[in-house]
Image (cartoon, rainbow, N blue to C red; front, side, top):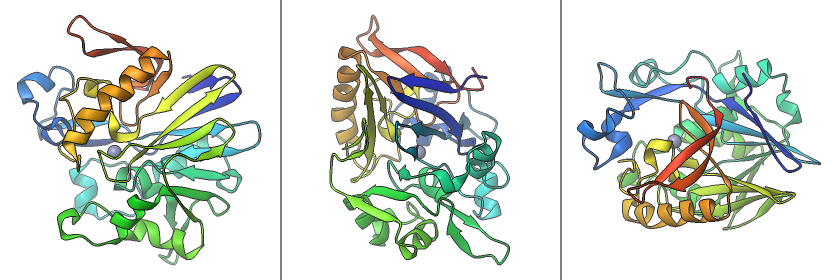
Length: 288
Ligand SMILES: [Zn+2]
């Protein structure tokens, strides 16, 4: 199926970093199950189906990736709880797409939770971790890195340092502050909310534009203001910024890219009768 979208001179191809299932209550925060279950039907363990939609970005002079899915070296119990795919899904799916990891020039990580950063390292036969993309600069907001390595008791379990150490040792981490142009037409934007250092990514070329929302709005079911994740570290910030981000996308007729939707990779937004945002699919995911 077609998983490619053109934004002016930028070509976006979506590559899964692995499907997973997460508890529906965790994914929808204050929204009761009686409301969310019709949009995202849960399995017998109350988990809903999600994907990790990574974007392979080809600009005029570089090849990059936005987010990397989860790693292939998580503990068996964790893998079972989240119904993770075997092996290292991103590396496998890039190989299927004919992409050589040595050709990746840059990686933007929206934030450092396990389902976004895990694909940056691979385990070799000796059991050692090494960077998956040995030539790539890895762009992370400085305050995200600070929180990830701070070992804060209130964020226990949120960050997996094993994923990050090989990158730092190889000198591949670039810490950035706020908005930075990473490649022609590709720029970061600090949002906060989901995590203090969460960033989204804006893609602009030849009058066309898209926004990779990261976990500010992970699926189309999260478009309404109060439909936000219990994982959000600053829920009120998400409620404040998400409507503004979505209004901006709609008013400029930009394409919204969803990091976890199992059905929709890209959509345009419009106001529904209830004044919440509705998605019109531009590019479907495999389960659509
Ligand atoms: Zn996520």
